[in-house]
Image (cartoon, rainbow, N blue to C red; front, side):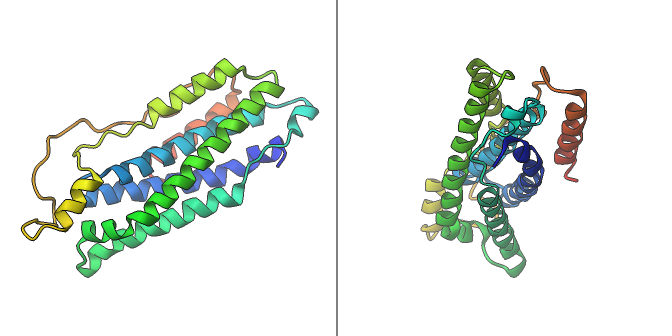
Length: 225
């Protein structure tokens, strides 16, 4: 896909990221305890959204016709498929609570699917990093140092810190224990600060129109619109 087309194709994918992340947060709150697969999924979705935001910002600034026609390996359908399937899995797991199914037991059974989507999100992230590097190498907008700065900022902003810490291995042990309680968590875990995402904060080099559009999208993500 040409770079100019990538800028137009990204917003629908970002909206899918926002929707999936919103439902995943609800699921973690329902489960009362956190496990590493859920947290990794949430972190990867946030990272994908932030990388998409960076990629859209760069591609929308390309002015030179040769740069705008640069071919990028942006697989829009693949990204949408992963996010839609993951969103469907999250909704399916969450719906089990309405039918009396023990949520955390069902989640253990579905973890293989979740890990498959986690692997796909990691692959998408690698693809977007390659696209950012390609743009920096063939345009006047960014250097490789700038791409490294974007990567560091994304990793920092997408770091998810659970209020309760519970690994998948611990969940497996609880599911197999006759004496375990599988409704609202087996015990209280130490409270930890919840990570707050304050938005993509790098603003240098972007046009006012783009920054306004990005701010509106960030507000929509924050308030769940």
